[in-house]
Image (tube, rainbow, N blue to C red; front, top):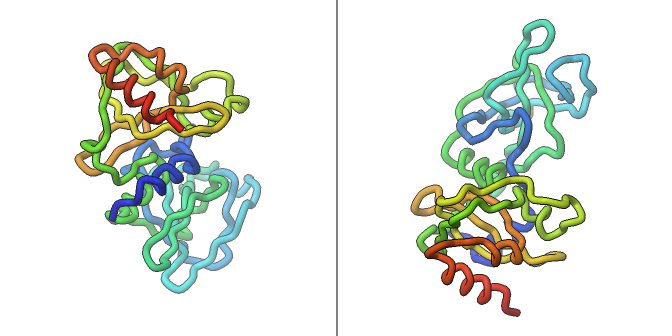
Length: 231
């Protein structure tokens, strides 16, 4: 079921970008993990020398998480899994990103591959993938590389970072989804995943977007920006 456009915009404004550093780069590098013991300590790193940041226990059906599929080894060669999100069964499966990354020893858990629903939720939560048909959005191909922000919040609250932190390559097709307005207006550029989904690529300040060379798509980009900046 598709979300209404206003709900998609709200999700865009609130969602966080994909994890950095050693975290998975896609859902194929994630697994389902179930706790198989009571009072298992969660650590700030892969090893008992790290601070305890939480406790997990087996419940009816097991406490369930999304974790990185590649374990980290402690000093004794014992594998530890990095927990990324908690799975809850409400009216439907729900996924909640953990406030901080934590690790659990592998001998207290069982693992399996993500099922289809879990993978879809993880893709949306961590990699900004939304169910929205690309054919419904105008597409442009910039003739030059476009400096962008990896997170909309960094774009429309510029005091948090003074310059773009990523670059969108020239010549690739980007979808124009909407303009978010904070302390400045920012254009969200997305890419098609398939015929039913789009993935966030970057956010560009409206003034920088207006000054970008879009080649043959220049008139289209200009008209779209003018329409979406109107009150």
